[in-house]
Amino acid sequence: MSECTHDCSTCGQDCASRNQGIQKEKPNELSNIKKVIGVVSGKGGVGKSLVTAMLAVSMQRRGLKTALLDADITGPSAPKLFGLKVKAESDSNGIYPAETKSGIKVMSLNLLLENENDPVIWRGPVIAGAVKQFWTDVIWNDVDYMFVDMPPGTGDVPLTVFQSLPVDGIIVVTSPQELVSMIVAKAVKMAKLMNIPIIGVIENYSYLVCPDCGKRINVFGDSHIEEITDKENIDLIAKIPIDPNLALQCDKGLIELFEGDWMENACNKIEKL
Image (cartoon, rainbow, N blue to C red):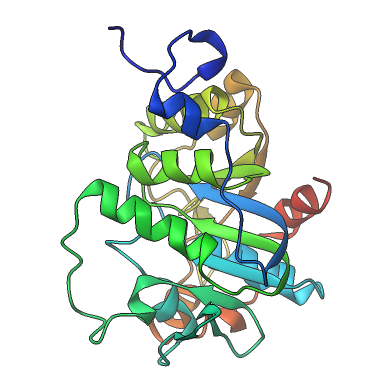
């Protein structure tokens, strides 16, 4: 048997993956979610969760109802970024997400754990099942844009999200290092195989602004992101600098107070979907 590429359109096998891929899961009957945006990366440590949170905050500031589904089950960070201390509650209808100070709805495994520092030692299928339940069992109510913070790579969880959720587009997060071309290519290729539109690429840690002279410093060397996006025929929609104030707001759970227009172009692209 040949290796599965998850591209069912070119495959004649009648397998479980094929049957899964053509049927999206229905959200909770009390949920009305208009658009689902996946935020992905080819590797960890590029600030994907930060970008997801900033996108949700920026869209909420535009008067749109936003939500964040934290699909990074083994490394959930959304509650920390938003300073959420409450636990998710449930009743016979389903699970209720936590809500941030500005009204963003958040669901993360850390909102269900008794101790947020407890490790999640689960195998892939169990993790994928938990992500699916965040879609089917959580009562999101009315949401204009849901952002899904996915774990890095192209494994079980991204595949589950692409197959089970009606993803309208993805944003690829990367950084300026040399190996970025391989990282972006992997994420882009997976999205194309799954027939998911690519909204664009966001480069995090793009540069540092000197606080004394205002000069831009390329800490990780010269970026080649434009060459890569041109080659892959996708848009570069944001460059986020290394900003000590932004890092401090993340540590204090105050991401909703960030200042900067870095996400404006990305938000414009998302609204045009």
